Image (tube, rainbow, N blue to C red; front, side):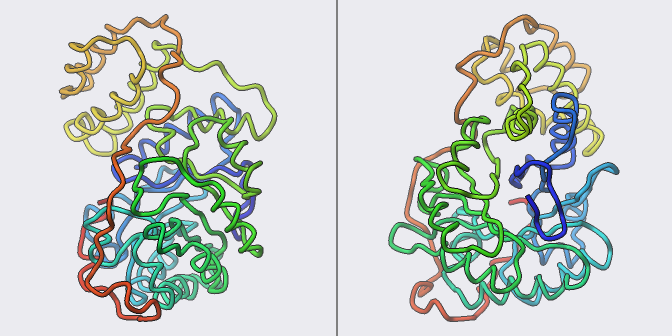
Length: 377
């Protein structure tokens, strides 16, 4: 698959996830793909950063744009609501060589985002949406940095926006579009509607269309591509606690036999490496606080015991992590109970929007205060 000038060996993209896809996690995924599949073939996207915070050089945001020396291509996702800040952020990325690819987030369903007109709410304002995409494309023109756009089906079942969003993004110069096949009202609940990915693929024919939603193993990815004719897949919650999933996907798309899923001992080694990478990125104290949520995902379905799980949820040092991992039975095979959905699912709900948001889809007024937040939220 090609995204502008970027050629990927396999049509697989790691979705940016707040608090997850930092340089430590991306490095771990790449290492496991290289070790198990013999290559690094997909695209690994950084956590979402806010365009305004990037332009203002907020220290937390700048730290989030850290890439490992061997990462290539370097992919960064922007959250933005304003053509002016979009242009400034994209130009900064290009001028300072911060990344090789820019993705734009119009899929966030979090109420604190949509109530101000950001995230999944914004594509309803189709002219403003087009202006924002055009600003990023204009800022990177001639640099070889492709701009891609990710969005949802729409706000809710009565307000689908994905077909317009895909068409507009392609017209404004986006190199690819990706659809999370849920509405904002669904959040992460229920089942992704792959038929809408197929509809977008039929509607947008001049750039690659990627599908996202309910891919938890390699078979799911192959099934989505067969069912929708999409050009690639975007992996989000399916890789939580399973960073080796990208090696399995690489094997599936290249026809190479996949490795046997890891034993509990092998998972423990992966957890230890993840903790080491997090400590290098954040420092040991914050790194160990961050590994706690990952441990719960890693041990999902494994027999680990309530006391040991509680202790790991309070781990403070790498030495303590080593001691706790040593209590796991290394010979336990990967259990069937560890497969399937993981991460947040929650319940559907009504989408909170700014007053009068649905009155005029052609209104270009930039929503007030929608980008006043730190990155990754």
